[in-house]
Image (cartoon, rainbow, N blue to C red):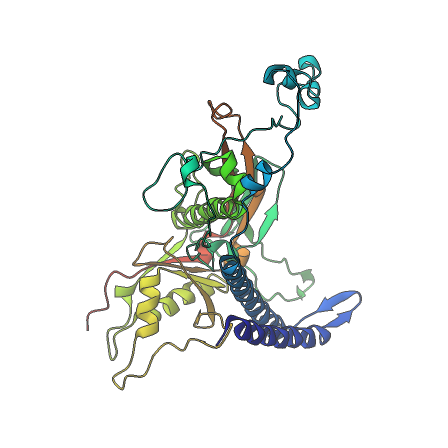
Length: 439
């Protein structure tokens, strides 16, 4: 099947999902200005939205592949450098380059230094040096006159990217603060401070004899915490001429830098230890629950890894939080998907339909190398923790670094600032696949 046919098939699936969600949305009731939505309606709507996002991502990926393929099939054309060289030469008479620079409009924008040391636009003289390395055979630092000719540049093939991210499980909110202060509720306590803390809510009679009955008192126990905004960044150096002559290369560099930030972000959200400039990741937060695979049932049938995830989900349910996501290492997820019974039938029912979302026990799965093999995390990501974006990921370019200005080099910097607040640690369960229960 061609890419175009696949895109049309995906678009049909997308329209079907959108029509289903419109039907669900039309069934919402409005009572006294409030939209009333049942739990089943919300669950169905959220499932469709998850499928819609995934199908949309697949369509965009296929369209990008087709664009890159078309670019590679185009006939060779005159390079930007050659086109610039063919333009009429600007004449400065017998003036020197220095004199021409001093009389240029670009230099005059400095206003004698009153407007700073950076020109609004670069000054371009009528000669352009060509010394970009060409990707043909052994790398050559200089392209000499003898090497000039017509080039047909094949499209660069970008490496595959991780499609589902840990961040997608969390709600995100923008902030202008440098530190997020929040309270973490850790349970109930009574006025007398009995141990363990209990919920003292109880049925109460209206009165006893002539005395009205006093209601029991419960107290909620809170502790204050802070989530500092942390900076994540990295950069790459490139020659200014390369990026000017090869827009696709510039795009790839930008995308790879941004992708590197996303990989770091997933790792920090899960594993950051909170020291130095690291986030305090969920797995390093005190108070989260734990469950070991070896603690499961050994008879009459030994628990599988999938069973361990279900038992861990129960711990989240018992904390009164419904789990909304499971994070698994690809090797552990592979073990679960490929597990079979004695008849060769797969044990884990996973939707493999077009655009389907991987699920385990009705819970969405994110498989990522950001979590260590042998460890899983399950919990109520949507309500028990919050991501705060101080500055969303962005790309900046500058030549003001070291001696880059005189070397015609530039810095491409990718940077973001964010904080993570884990407000209800008990809603998360860390699962350890230490060993199967002994029969």
